[in-house]
Image 1 (cartoon, rainbow, N blue to C red):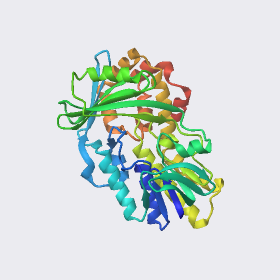
Image 2 (image 1 turned 60 degrees about the horizontal axis):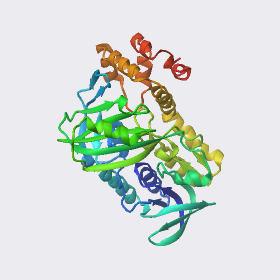
Image 3 (image 1 turned 60 degrees about the vertical axis):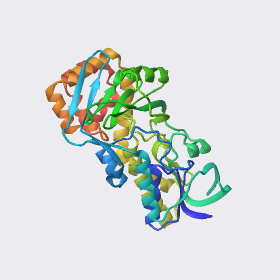
Image 4 (image 1 turned 90 degrees about the vertical axis):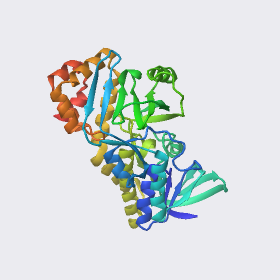
Length: 383
């Protein structure tokens, strides 16, 4: 069956791209390997207000509103950032993704669920699913197939630079619903978190590269013996693939390493990339141009939009991996300066950290903590 656009993956990235293409009048198919959109849930569910707006959905998936964060070191020091206004929301990801898929379907996109792609040749994807083996031809393909990056692997393309393993669990626990809790020392390769999802409910998790189950169990012990109501594991790719287009295909979302290296969140950057991918796909179909030279326009667009933030974020991620517990503790104490706290609350942005990073790296107290850990690549961003 011929389509103008085939999208692989029906998460927020894939459904965004599918909806835009269908709205533009293109015959669009969205293929999803799972039987239910939004399940299994492999996300902490914390979205910045900007990321939530990008999804273009109603408030019905929102479970909680967050105004700040408490950061705790293993040496007992902590700081509290409180914007006193909503900076992020905790969502039911299944409900969020269902609504985004419904929007795309209403625009005219077709969906194939419980269907996986096992090969791509020329302008055809080969799938297997409830209907057996099927083939779907396309003029352009948008790969939004998550960390497994099936399409990129089939093409033999270089993928994300780093892969982290994650575990999280929902537990009953009373806490202040306004604040996320962050534990940098819970996982030296990244960090641990505790996110209040509702009254008396907490989502605890971490990502790392080594001994992740042991680190997770240690973090869970902080909250005492609790019955786990929902336990999930997942993979977090970080670091952009070197090239996000080729062979009539555009790559967006986790399969291309679009997650923010500073927080692991992938919705804002992934959906922004999906919008650029869909716009270029529409242009390509209108002009009947699908060569790599034309598709490079996609990479130019997303780099102009979010490339600087992602590049800086990965450098900050590498710097964080070199920091000892003592350095983390010293940094937390330095950030506790009232002037610095005020600046972070005023200028901090979960999705675009370059502004606050530039400001902090001018503070003598911060420079004393980080010293030679700050690579020249980061310094050059702010010259």
